[in-house]
Amino acid sequence: CDNYPSSRYWDQSSLRLSDLARFELTDPSGAARELLDLFSSQRGNIPPQRLAEIAGRRLGDYDRAVSILQAAGSIPPADRVPLAEYLYLAGLRDQSPGENAGVEKIRQAWRDLGRLLSENAEFQGRENAVGLYLDIYRSHAATLNAGEKSAAETLLRGELPHLAQGAVRTALLIWLGELYEASAEGAMTAATLARADSAKMMWAQAISGSGTVEQSGRAMLLLARSLENAGFAGAMDSAAHLYGTLTGRWPQSRWAALAGLRIARMHLSQERYSV
Image (tube, rainbow, N blue to C red; front, side):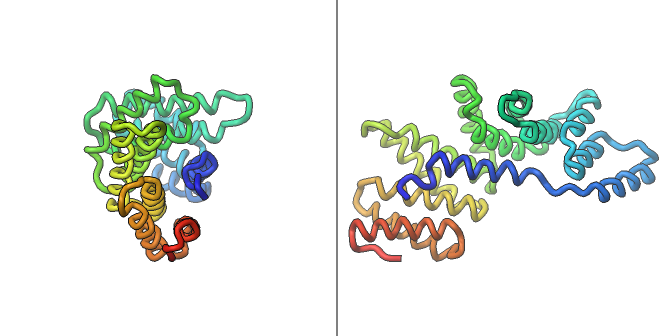
């Protein structure tokens, strides 16, 4: 209970579920009908973007989707986002023990997204690019060297002011909070206290944003847990209030179950709190 949801098990399980969610249900017969309609309406002159979409989204053939877009020649920034996603999905599918092909595809997709974000100020789909770049970073950080991690963190911090309220901004706020919290571990100094406060601020913003229930619940639990350990007057009361709010807002969620465990722990240790 003390380490959940910040444990390695939690992080890896959540990221794996996010990866699996990217594989949408395929529909071969529907794709065939769509191709026939396109050939009929456009006299066989189908844009490569649409062919790649059918290959990737409808048939699950991500390598073919990548090949179609790459064969089209010069690729505009907006089309480089789905290209990177198809390459990433192909890498996820190709991952196997002792084989580097899948990992290299994932790393290539991540590097391509980094260059895309660094070299282009504005383009359609930029928010999706930021979200995918962050997802790959979080799930495959172990394959990156220290320089790559530092550059990625700088890039992502710089994206925050430009993101509209929504799931991508909320995900970035939660991740930044976790980053600040990790860097605040150790001796209590002015610098570590400032980073701990920054973590709380990121999570508070994530709660007030327009993220998903999954994101809001995670941010609320992380903020409440950090307040348990804050040590200032009223911090434990604030944590208890957040846990109570969580159980009331999403009573059937796993977040409510976890909040109940946390508040029960507080109740046992201080004999004053209740759900």
